[in-house]
Image (tube, rainbow, N blue to C red; front, top):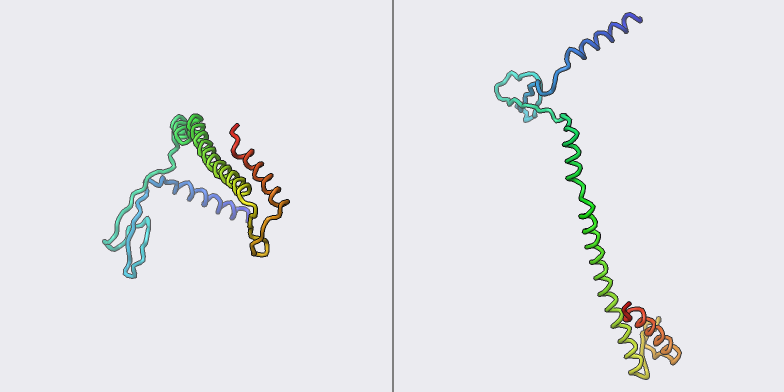
Length: 155
């Protein structure tokens, strides 16, 4: 039993090492049969209607310096990253500035409206219009003044 297994191992190793051929040295044939099925083989077909494909080695390792250069080209520099970050920050600040201006104008308009009219009508939670009480009007005025201080006063 041991001799038989070792014989198979020896034969297997011999076959493996004897067929160690580079892929660039193998001819590959491609053809289409009568049923329109595409075939690929290392053996030349009997018909004359085939094409021979060539292979190339794609596993060739790059030199160390070439790998380093390729890596450097792929990564943006610190200056580029910083410039991109600063640009994004400037865009965000501009959007915030526009929103702040809108909030300031809305707060100023609320104060003007609250001071200009004695009766202020609002839409209640029940979907009906109602007039603000003096206490509610005072609370709205305080809130609008806080908004003016927050949005209109520039640092």
